[in-house]
Image (cartoon, rainbow, N blue to C red; front, side):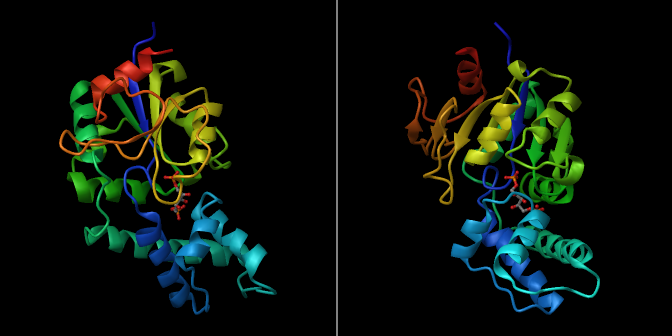
Length: 254
Ligand code: XBP
């Protein structure tokens, strides 16, 4: 039986419920700075979240919802510039501490670090966004607990393509069978499973009704000893929060 040696975390929606209150707000502030009268309300952003990658999401919005927009510097440069502005706004939002980690995330990351498991991030967001979220919520030393940051444009094909998880595995020096993934979306599950990885899902309000067939287990959150998770699909074997022992049992099932 292959031993669990690595844990790979998605970021947005998994570590923090940060899309509507974080990324969306940052995009809208960047649009104001850019002098365009776009505003992504929560309903619009829920739909746009089907496209992974902030730059890819902006391009999709331009192509699907904005007629005849041709910025002087060209679309590619405009998207690059506005996305950089958005990332600055998002970083400032993170620094305020107003975007906390989800239930159980801080505890599990600390436990995983202390357990000796190799840790990786596999996210469509930028490296700086992932590092800042961890550092602001878990301290400046926390990013150093991770062996690999597979983020953003290190791969061309974003989730649901498997590329980001294949990149993470290659940098970890581990096989897919030696790892587990924690994700929150159907596309993230597809990306991880296409890379051969078994996946635990913690849904969030946007993804609760997505199709998670093939996940090892689907939970509403990672839980805490005094705040048990709810099992939406699969068998928790009597556990009520996700810790390293729980992950090892899930991993040992196959
Ligand atoms: C979710 C994404 C990201 C964020 C926005 O990433 O699709 O694009 O929505 O971040 P994941 P950027 O679930 O893989 O963590 O604007 O930096 O892309």
